[in-house]
Figure 1 (cartoon, rainbow, N blue to C red):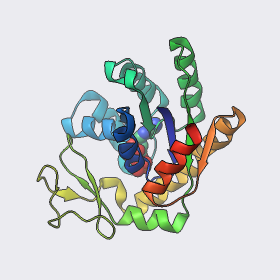
Figure 2: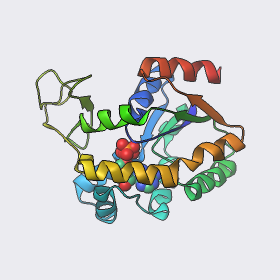
Figure 3: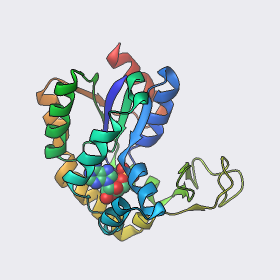
Figure 4: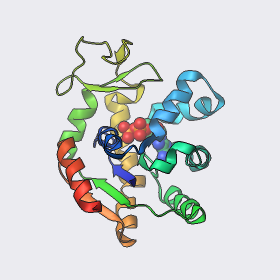
Length: 214
Ligand code: ADP
């Protein structure tokens, strides 16, 4: 599978990507995870991205394209990939299109995870993320709590609320999404590549995607 996952913050891109990787060995590539890892490690990339991320703004297209040009060349991409959180702007989508054409690769499609705003808001405020940058497992205090409150099931590190999961930053991220990322739905629809999914349970989303790309 080679898919783009589109959807607002909290739409479930990461959860769905993880489920899809189990089906055929394709890899999840999350620009958010890559950036958070860089911030935690204090690399140059992390320093450049940190302020924008904390405020709920996007980091620059140039920075993202630099990361993705390298990432998509790695060996594990041969098995397919689920792009989670990328592209996020029209210029990123154009640049990705050019990159894939050069590589002779065609995507299976862009999946639009269409989730109502009240569901999104509820999910984001109750989301907890493992603080270990190597792990970044995701929990939800209501629907998917860790076995021991505040402790990651997978690696034992503390689970935390992300810096950009304050109410103010969430509002800003949703605004940024509506302005800069939502137009990608029309963009991929125009190319005949859009797969619309409006299920809320992750399993139903995965089934709908499998049916669409068969
Ligand atoms: P979300 O839950 O908002 O989908 P992500 O984990 O995908 O969060 O991204 C977290 C933050 O990382 C974003 O708010 C943004 O600042 C930055 N980011 C991630 N991917 C991109 C991208 N493709 N372009 C620009 N900024 C990005």
